[in-house]
Structures are given as C-alpha cells and as structure tokens.
Image (cartoon, rainbow over all chains, first blue to last red; front, side, top):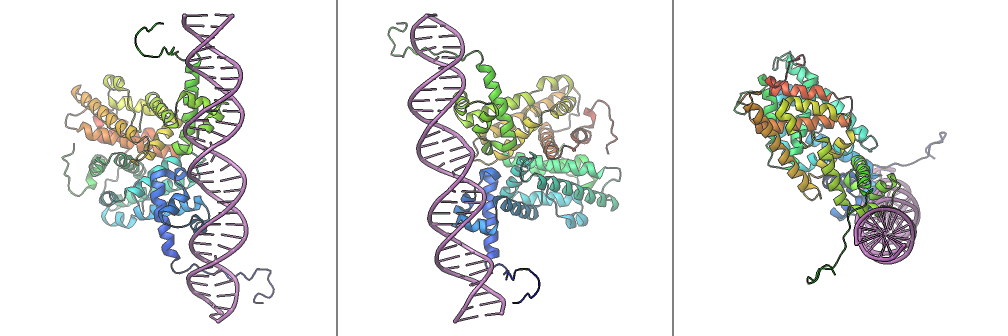
Length: 218
Length: 218
DNA sequence: ACCAAACCCGTACACATGCTACATTTTGCG
DNA sequence: CGCAAAATGTAGCATGTGTACGGGTTTGGT
C-alpha cells in the first residue's frame, strides 16, 4: 500500500515507449496527406492506417478519436508551415527583417508544401460552418493570427520601416486575405504566380516596405 | 407507323411535367444548403431528400447521380451569386459603371447569401486536389473568370477610368484573391468587415477607380 | 526476472452511403 | 377516355464508416 489514506487509485501511469514518438509523427504525416486530399469528412482512419501498413486500432489508440487526430494534424500543420490560411509564427523574422520580406520568404518556401496548404485551405472552408467540429479552432486561429500580424505591422511602424499613417489592422486582414486567395488559386492551378501577386500587394499597400522596388509589375 | 423505314424505335419521348421545374429547383436549393454545410463528400443525398420530405430515388431520378447534382448546384450558384470564388457574370455592369463600383455593389449584395458563398468556398478548396470530381470544373471557372475580369479592366482602361499603366491580368488575379480571402474570413467570422477590405484594395491598387475617395482608411 | 502498462491487432457492431431493381401513382398527350 | 411515360416510393445491396471490446505481444521501470 503506497497510498495510505487518500482514496486515489495507485495507478502506475507509465509514459509512452521510446519509439512511440516516431509512430506518432508517422500517423500525423499520413493523416495530413489523407485529410489534405479528401477533406476531414472524406478522409477515413482506414485510409490512413492502410497507408502505413498499420492497424486501424493502433491509430485510435494513439489519438482517441478521429477529431482529436484532426486537431493534432492542424496544430502541427499550423506550426510547421506557418503561412496563409491563418498561420503566422514567424514573429521573430518579422521583427528582424520586417513583415514584408519575412512574408515574401515564407511565401517562397511554402511553395514546396502544397499538401499542408491544401489541408488548411480545405479545412478552413469546411469549418466555416458553425456546426463543423473544427469551427472554433479556426475562428481562434484567424483571430490570433490577424492580431499577431497587426502587431508586427505596428512594430514595423515603430521601427520606421513603414509609414505610421497606415492601419495595422486593415493591413493584417488584407494581407491574410490576398495570401489565402492567391494560395487557393495556386492550389487549383499551379501555374499561378504567387510571388508576383504577393509582391504586388506590398507595392500597392506598403510601397515603402519592400527593399528595392522592381516595380515593373504595374 | 410514323417512322416507316428507319430502324429507330418509335420511342414516344415525353418532356417533363409542369411541376417538374419547381421540384428541380427545390432539390437544387436543398442540395445547395446541404453541400454548403457538409461539403460534397460530407453531404448525402439522403440528407437532401429528408430536408424535402421527398424520397431518395426521386432526386436521383431527376439528376442521375450525385456528381451530376453537384454540377447543377455549382452552375446555379455560380450564375446567381456571381462573386468571389471565381464567379463573375456582371460584365454588363462592369462596362457601364466600371469594375470597381460594380464589384463593390456585388460584394454588398452577396453578404446576404452566405450559403452559396460557403458552398463555392468549400468546393473550391476541396476540388483543388486533382482527383476531386469537380477539379476540372473549378480550374476552368477560375481561368475564365480571371480572363473575363482582366478584359473588364482593360475596357476600363480604354474608357479612361483607370490608368493605362496597370496590368489587367495582375489586377484581375489580385482582386479575385483578396475577394476570396476576405470572404473566407467573413464566412468564418461574420464580424469581418468585407466592404472595408475591398475598398482598401481599390484604394491601394487603383486609387483613381473609386468615385470619391473616402480614403480615411489608411 | 517480474509485471503492469503501452502497444498492436482482429473482430464486430450499429449505422450511413450511393445506387439499383421493382412496384405504384400521377401526369399529359393522342 | 386510354396508355405510356414521368414521377415517386419501398426495399435492398454492397460497401464504407467510427468506435468498442478482448486478446495477444512488446516494453521498461522496479
């Protein structure tokens, strides 16, 4: 009897195994591609398990339910890809080099991860219906990311990188909007020139923010 | 014997009944809201039939298959709502009053049809995966709408409404992008101010296009 | 080495799906 | 009116779904 008085059960709770972490990310990766190609409702746990030569029950053992899997996938995608569709975590970058150049770089690197972008795009749209399981998640995400970007713009203003006249809130919402919109066009038709579109946004909205104006666009 | 020689069967093909047209649109309407809340793969024919106190088989009688239903729904939504998410049919309006004011008006009126917008948003994202049944449909849609908008911008230039220096193609893609993006934010969180965002786009990208500059935005 | 927990699997259940016969009623032209 | 086509309905099929349960195997702390 270890616990002498309390009624708490002497549950010897053990942590996960060593290789569990790897399985965890394996499942997350597979789930990401499945949800990204079939959507949340369209993608099945069995699809994911088949893609891993794994049992269905294993993946529900790690993540108790389908929705919890989705949440984990979203969290991970949001962190690793941090881009349009409400995902910004590059505040350090913004502070150092300014929102404009940080954004342009992020746009460029994200061109190599279409699956994650597609996932966020599909789920953002799917979850816009209030009954969708992930509705609250995306509401919070967009709110916080918009606020974070606005703060970054304000910081740019404080550093004198962009004109103090501009409205950081308006800039934030507009930047996210064109980012998301261009990304959608690019996902549908990869011949879309995302970089050009994003550069145009900055040239139009914050011409003083870009390092050198190759303003041969318009 | 009406047909004397040909081997054609004397099939007395009759047209649809009188009330069939109404049923047709009833089904389309229900299907629209169902697909708009659950997506294409998530929405079921039975959901639609239940919502109409109708039999499942009736709706497959009118539209042979689920995908054909979707196509009809998309076509109808595209025509009636004509807006972001690649739907422009207001070329007359554009020619008469210019792209900017026509767009702003369309943005305003579309605020009252969230279901159709949500439908187009969800399906545009869903269909970005090449295997999606509606992929081709959306590729064509975006292509043609972007071209149409670019033409409208070029017409505005010819009429002297906007500066000839601007690139109609770039403007077209960017306008659609911010339109789609803002609409997504608005669908997720209705407190988003779409009108302000759209006005900002024109003030930044084509300041000479708006009738009077209430440029108190930034 | 022991043993309980973590892991993994097979099976099964209750339900939902798109679609297909087949039967029945309703409609509208001849 | 009559009759065939349209419209609607009932039942069912084959498949797929998320989740629950029980029984194995592996792991790692004691």
